[in-house]
Image (cartoon, rainbow over all chains, first blue to last red; front, top):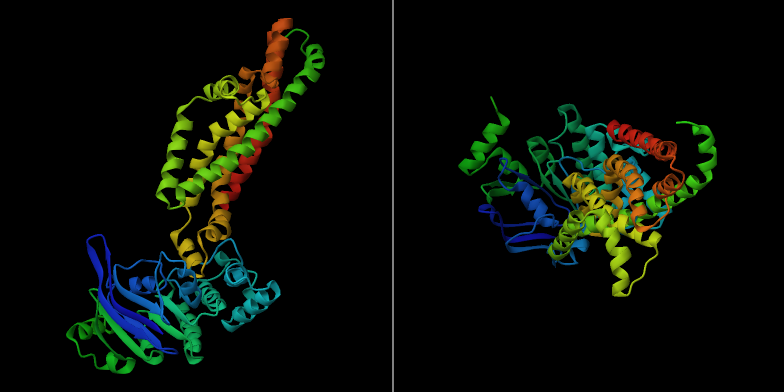
Length: 243
Length: 217
C-alpha cells in the first residue's frame, strides 16, 4: 500500500536518507526504530509530502507522492499524520479540531461531521472533552484528540511520528492503548517510536534504521528478541538496558 | 486663556465639522491600509519568489517616501496624469498607502510567529495554502497582531492632520482657519489638542485591552 523505492533525501550537504526501500501492506503495523538523527521521522514526513525527496519514488496505492503536484492533497487525505508535539489547533475546541478536515477539506455536511466527530472523540475516550480547548487538556488527551483528528479524514493509513515522546511517562499508556485498539481494528500504521514494548506487542514488522539506511528489518518479535546485525544489537542493548 | 469657555462654545460646531472629517479620513485610510497591508503580507509569505520580491520592493518604496510628499503627489501630480481626485479621496488614498507598509510588516511578523507545526498539521489534513491561512494561521495571528494594530490606529488618527496640507478641512485645518481669522491662537489650539486627545484616549484604552488579552495566553 505504501511503497518506498530507493528514496534519497539531503538537507544541504547532509544526506539523511541514503536509499530507503520498504513497503507497508494494507492492515499492517510497521514500527520504525533507530537512534535519533537516523532519518526515521524524515521518512514519515516524505511519505505525506511535508518534505520533498531528491531521488527514488514514494507511492500510496500507486499514486506517486510529489510535494509540488496538486495530487498531494489526495495523498494527504488518504494518509494522516500524528505528530510528536500534537500540533492541535489551539484556537479551536477538541471537537472543532477533529471536524476541521472533514468540514473544510472533504466538505462533509455539518451534521454528519459533528456526529462523526463526537463518535471519534468517544472512541479515543474523550467524549466529555469535546468542548475543551487544547491548552486545557493534558498531553495524553491532546494526543488522543490528534489521533481522532487523523481518523476523521477516514485515512487508509496513519503515520505516527514519535507520538509518545513528548508525554510525561504516566500518560504514555493511554495513547499507546488507543493505538493498539486501532491496530486491532485493522488500521494500516507506520509508527516511529522508542516504545520497544509497543513495537514488540503490536507491530507486525520492525525496521531498524541507522545512518539513513535500513540496517535490519523483520517480524517484530524476532527482530527485537534476536537482532542479527551488530548495530541493531548494540542499539537495543542501550535502549533496553540504559544502565 | 481669557474667555476660554466662551470661545469654546462658539467654535465648537466648526471644530466638530473638522472632527467628522478627521474620523472619516482615519477610518477610510485605516480600512485601506489594512486591506493593502494584508495583501502585501500575504504576497510576502506566499512562497512565490516574484510576489514576495514585488511586495518587499513596494513596502520599501512606500516607507521611503514621506506621507506629505505622497499626499502632494496624489493631489497635485495625478491630475497631470489624467486622474483627478478630490482632496478627501487623495488623503484617504495617500494615508492608506503610506500606512499599508507598516501594517504589512506587522501582519507578516504575526504570521511568521505561528508555530510551523500548525502549518504542517493543516497540510497533513489536506489543507491548501489559502485554507491553511484562513482557518489556521490568520485566526491565531490576530491575537499577536492586535496590540501593534491598535497603536497604528492612534498614529493614523494623529497623522490624519497631514490631510490639512491638501485642503481637507479636518480638525487641524479648521483650527488653523479659526485661529488665523480670530487670532485666538491659545484658545483654539488648546481646544484642537483636547479634541484629538479625547479621540485618542478610547483607542489607548483599547490597545491596553488588546495587550492584556494577548498576554493572557
